Length: 255
Image 1 (tube, rainbow, N blue to C red):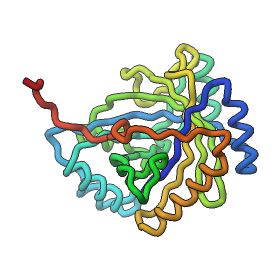
Image 2 (image 1 turned 90 degrees about the vertical axis):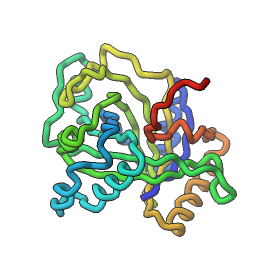
Image 3 (image 1 turned 135 degrees about the vertical axis):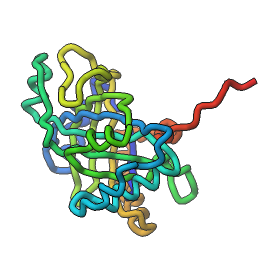
């Protein structure tokens, strides 16, 4: 699969206007949600996923996606995300400072993303395009632990979502940085912390099959969205290296 998206920075005082703007454009009410995002890195000694044969036997759990991820990590170690949805009631309790646990059987989403494609004559600089692998499984944290992955960051996202009929998603997101020591089944105390930055990120995103035809269609749709919002939203050009999930080998200091 390939992910293509536009990005814009939304200041805190612009959030209400942005909610109304996108709600009117998509003709739907926003979906408000919280998500826990954990980042994991593989053990540099282990090439790929050591339990891949066991995972391939589980025909009902995306064996082809696990195999694709195994081949990627065997060539180049990368950081990956594990995303867990937090229900509205859990989020409200966390805002009040109450201790909240995430059920062990709740599905998690694993996401790996490649270094975005470089700008070219065929890809406008304001559109980010990158390959991605997504796997849904309630046991992701255990699977990663069995394969010697280590958690390196722990983030919470608050977000609003809208969709168009062509599966284009609008997502308005801000983040909190949680304690790395927070157990995997616990939700952070949102009442005790401030968001990471005084702004939100707006992403207009679509996920398509990795075929030239489908990717060109997605690109055309995003260009259309950019044109429609030209006078009200500034879609930025970001350095693709800031979205590089590869883990580069450690080298000594230059002499």
